[in-house]
Length: 156
Image (cartoon, rainbow, N blue to C red; front, side, top):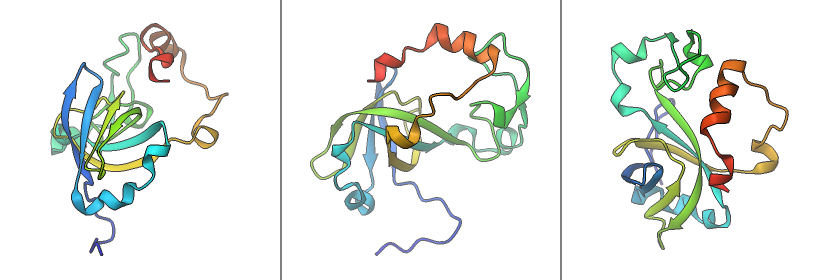
């Protein structure tokens, strides 16, 4: 049985390797492997990871940012952005499963924007019925950039 303290984050694995920009191998810690039973029945996962290179007082005190991937964007509050500089440097990605190790020792995925050695703090199955919001809206400055740069079909 795992002995975990309240309000502490325990990495369940880490990004072991990144290739072709958005493909990655997530190495799972042995003590968490049994928690992945039947994960192979899903096509996509939600990955929560720690921006470990931003885990310092300089980046954790940032409250306003200029979204770097959106040159036309205004300065916004950090919680209105996906900036890795934030009080709790947690990243989130929806990824496609490519391969899973026989004993859940690793998961190869596509669509992860984390760096090598990033701690993985949680993995959840992507469930379209719950995780898709068809009428969600975004600001005009983000829509323009998103339409030009992201091909959602890539991850289907």
